[in-house]
Image 1 (cartoon, rainbow, N blue to C red):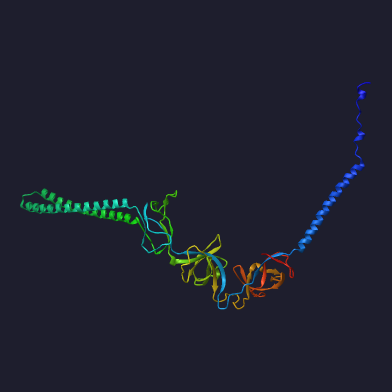
Image 2 (cartoon, rainbow, N blue to C red; image 1 turned 90 degrees about the horizontal axis):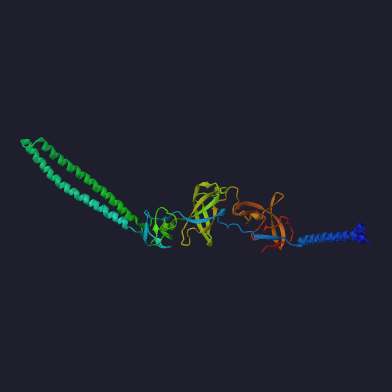
Length: 413
């Protein structure tokens, strides 16, 4: 038997897939796909029913009573800071080394009181030198005056001899020239004395500049230099040279500075009464008055700066404290309701629009009640209610847009 007769011949018919096997695998895939779709549908329907059964969460607030009778209503609310009109970083007029500091934070000082001293040794040397020059010039004047007196005697003798024919005209001219020269030198020396006096004043001023004094009465709020440090009226950079000795605040000039939106600046006027409350003392109502409205606006912030004066200062009021103010009106402004007409104050966010009418949603026994309201003027983040809501009633401030009357809700804690 030959080797070629032993090699098996491939049978392509054996590579066919049985139709029954193909159908079984396709049916398994369809079953798994159907089970997945059914599971998603069940979860979706269950989620919808679960959401339907869940109560919406809302944020609530209580309607606040209006101003008490006899109290002025607030036209506008704003916030700002306590700032002094007079505040100065006391600096030296010359560059020098600090040799003494007589102040500390919280110390009250009088006008002209010495705050610090600089090294004035160089200035005193210049002062001594200027005085010596002045004394030398004054001594020279005395010497010249003695010579002048002698020259004038010589001139008189020469004149007598010249009239007698003994002396010549040349000798007389020479004697007169000597007298005139000495007079000129005396005048020049007197000018030198005056120049020396001016240099003395400059040197004395340098000595005086080494003593730093308070420009006005006030409170030291910052100590900016220590003994041994260099100070200069011009910053040298690098942090090694100080530009100030201490920061002084006139506590009698404290006032409030606020930025008012230019859209509401028409509600503010000079002399207007203001109620102020410091962030540090929120229960302390401080009477204040508008001192001035700065006649310019900030185009970037769209605000106008307003300065408010305290009716009476108090030691608890400190510079840079945060403060909230309410601008008051003695009489109702045009288009605004009187205090007797205002029933309550509610947040503006609680007002909803329904068919062109203003409505609010009240919460009673965890269920919503729709209530139409009549609104007045806005007061910062609040709005006046003339009818529809009474003080103390609970209203929805934030919640889903799909809220409806009679719906049960859950109050956000």
